[in-house]
Image (cartoon, rainbow, N blue to C red; front, side):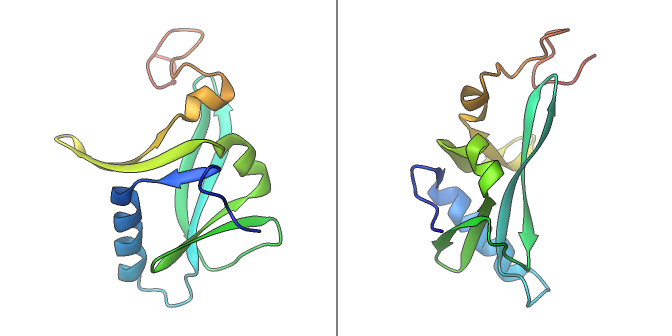
Length: 121
């Protein structure tokens, strides 16, 4: 199943960095970058990425120049409309998932203590 650009978008900076990372990987069996969602706590769902060497029948696929992106059907429900960006800041470089909290109704703060980004103090 193909992953539509409206399901999950990548900025040019994210595409460039993903292609660079997968080309530098030591494992020739790597097929793609898997985008995943992990269970939420008080700060909401967690979003991440990892290299993968396998595809399942439940994966949606997005083909890019030099790599593919896999997202399983369950994670896609939490990722529709999300934009993945790669940003470089004085504190360091990282991938950023934009619009993630808008999908799940989260605010990016802990409901119990108000800590930004989740995680209770």
